[in-house]
Amino acid sequence: MTEPVGPSAMAMAGMRRVFVRDLLLEAAIGVWRHEHGRRQRIRINLDLGVAEPPQGHPDELTAVVCYQEAIDRVKAIVAEEHVKLVETLAERIATACLADGRVTSVRVRVEKLDAVPEAASVGVEIVRQRA
Image 1 (cartoon, rainbow, N blue to C red):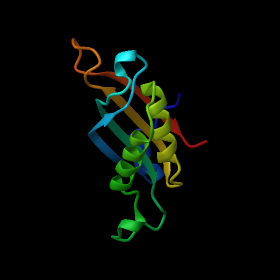
Image 2 (cartoon, rainbow, N blue to C red):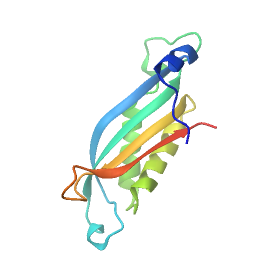
Image 3 (cartoon, one colour):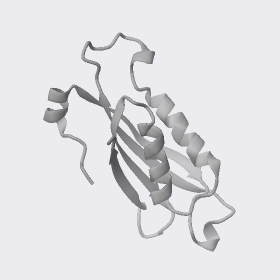
Image 4 (cartoon, rainbow, N blue to C red):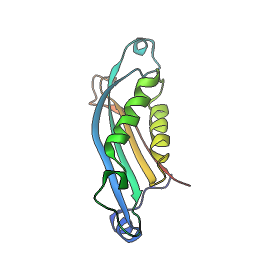
């Protein structure tokens, strides 16, 4: 799995990061019997690598990748149906983020906050890039 480019390479390539930190939601998620039929707390973090247009952009919302639209897509995915694995949820979110042609890479972290009493959270982080 290739990591998104670092800050100096991003500057040279005309890239920016759009991010969402610590989005707290309730999800129907889990493989265990006690996880079915109920929702549990999850935390989602997104980091989108976005190509900047060569001419820059106007000070208009339509000219940028909107973090609120990304949040709305995540909420819709989480609300769809029971998902067994955090990996599956992360892949669905990554795919939705990459559907915007301006997004060249995405890092998605999905954490279950109450799955293991001794841990603050458990989960998965994935990185995907446009081919």
